[in-house]
Length: 80
Image (cartoon, rainbow, N blue to C red):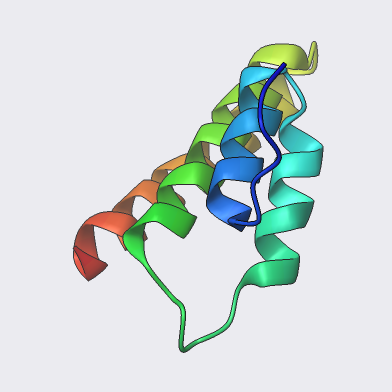
């Protein structure tokens, strides 16, 4: 049994490992603010978008999610 963590990044990573990208994104959105902005937030958001794209059957939605993921990864790299 995994330990409960108070860190939102670790919780989001756990959601991603369990195949729950929507919950990971929701958690990241709730915990984002300009003061705690970090590359990790955007990297995890990009990972969630990639997982969501893999789960959808719609080609249009898949392309949109992958474009969003690239934007998130780019933001992460700019901050880092």
